[in-house]
Length: 192
Image (cartoon, rainbow, N blue to C red):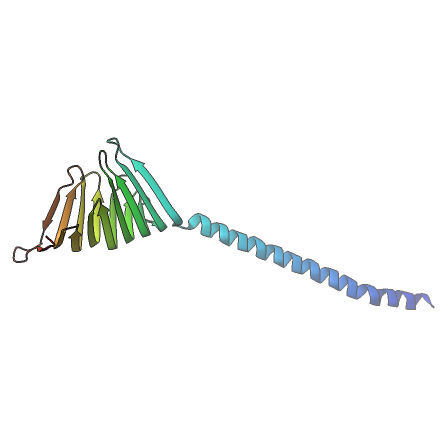
């Protein structure tokens, strides 16, 4: 064989190998850039997200009152990072020298600084043998009250009361029940 034929055969064999190597290097570079881009997107989503899964807060004030709130999801308010909007809410309040109060609702708005919480949609508050249902509950340790409005229904072993507003004093456990207008009356049904 002459020298030209050997070089030509070598070149023809080498050329596809070189093309394959160059192509695989280019693909690796593209894949590396794609992976880096995907990682960067994930990091941005994590650090820029205001969604929290399985929210749990516990607080105890100077009087010894304890407050625990749990939710399946929380979303931090973009305008005020002290406020968290909650989904599937369950709260437990243990007041000094008192039994637990349990509150559940579909949604909530919780202030992590002063513990004020607004519960909304399908609100249920249970205390001993007492139960209050409503669509809106405003809980405030600062005001020392819980106010249930919108279809408020109070039940215990012997009574059912329906009204516009039920307000509970957290210290005395006294409940005020009233209507928004004087021409309407609280509906009371007694089992005794």
